[in-house]
Amino acid sequence: MSKITIFDTTLRDGEQSPGATMSTAEKLRLAHQLDKLGVDVIEAGFPVASDDDFEGVRSIVKEIRRPVIAALARAHPLDVDRAGAAVEAADKPRIHVFLATSDIHLKHKLEIGREECLERVVEGVERAKKLVDDVEFSPEDATRTDVAFLCQVVQVAVEAGATTINIPDTVGYTLPTEYRALIETLFRDVEGLEHTVVSVHCHDDLGVAVANSLAALEAGARQVECTINGIGERAGNASLEEVVMALRIRKDLTRHHTDINTTELYKASQLLSHITGIYPQPNKAIVGRNAFAHEAGIHQHGMLKERMTYEIMTPELVGAPGTQLVLGKHSGRHGLRNRYKELGYDLSDEELDQAYKLFTLVADQKKSILDEDLLVILHHGAMKDAPESFRLVELDVNCGGKWSTARVKVSHHDEPPREASAKGDGPIAAAFSAIDELIEGTVEIIDFEIVAATPGRDAIGEVNLHARIGGRTFAGRGASTDVVHAAARAYVNAINKAELAKALEGVKMEKESSLGGPT
Ligand code: KIV
Ligand code: ZN
Image (cartoon, rainbow, N blue to C red; front, side):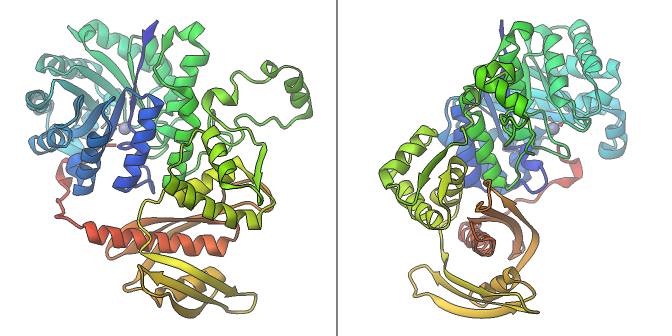
């Protein structure tokens, strides 16, 4: 049985997913969960991209010591040095150098020939090697690169000292048999490759990223790059939970294992969804809402007699909660703390205070509180990502006619709350306009989404929005059984993040776009 290294790139490739931008505090929260999950490598960011990215990697390095912490860099001295600086304090630092190698990329993006490409690979890897021992190299768009040239590229990267060679299917173009054959060819034709770890990195444009990753393992690859919920550029990356569970459930066939604590998978998926506002589709394998739901009578009958009739794994194995009814209006703090413990969250007294406050509000609106409600409460209330400089104290709306009106009361720090009213062509627009009266500056909504975060008529509505404030984009999230309240909270949440960013504003580093960014 071989151990497969799980390289999580949720914080880097995943964050490149449209709308998945995370603040440093959010990245840190997710990194702690990845640590609990037991991933071997966390790719924490692309430090040269911005000061925020650099700081994001640094803060993860400071707090997370067990896994390898990798930082991405183009094969360019500035990138490599910046990545090196970001991970220098890590116990196990890695620099991940990449350079495109397909003729399409060389010609149209980099405007260089193959010879120069080879030189840059060597320079990039050697420079990284001077900073850290653990250097990974990726020939970007490997699966559309001429195979003989790819072998040459990998050969020089190995000779320059790369310890991991990653073969990215950057545009999700390959298919399992072809990808497997490519890895076999590399093992056959590149001298010394067997002394490195061969890694795979698959995008899901044709819906076969996980299948491709598993096929490559059959050819001898021993590291899989993947993301929670499969988020990532375009159609996303190979989904971590699917790769891990395929290896676990079919170890009879694959003969591989990982060090992942599978009971933390569902929690990781939930946390990411709540942070980004991007939820997996209900029928998503392993972590979708319906992954363990049995609807057909014949299936339910079979399940009641013997779970194995229709379940190849239990929800408990991936940490998915059952949907039993748990708490209600009369439950106390003790009961709440216990239930969170059972769900795997050990709340501090302060977190419990905040969760309990929200819990009582929700319990006033709903007869029974489901585990899913508790997760929404936790992610929206108890674990705040920005201090509540502005706080929505009251909101009343009147709607139904041509115009809706809203009256809000908002407090700012310790000042007494102020009140404003406004009208709009709907209750949410009216509430936003009333809040605008009480803050400085303008807020422009870029996108806005309402989802039912829990099942049933009295579901908790969750609002995710992106707003442009002071020239930057901030995600705002809010939840309530009343969607107008949820929207107003999301709006104020984005404003609070902008306040926090203003307070933390540092020197901005220019993006070096001329060299092209990673996919
Ligand atoms: O898809 C890709 O090619 C990448 C590389 C930077 C590894 O994300
Ligand atoms: Zn990628």
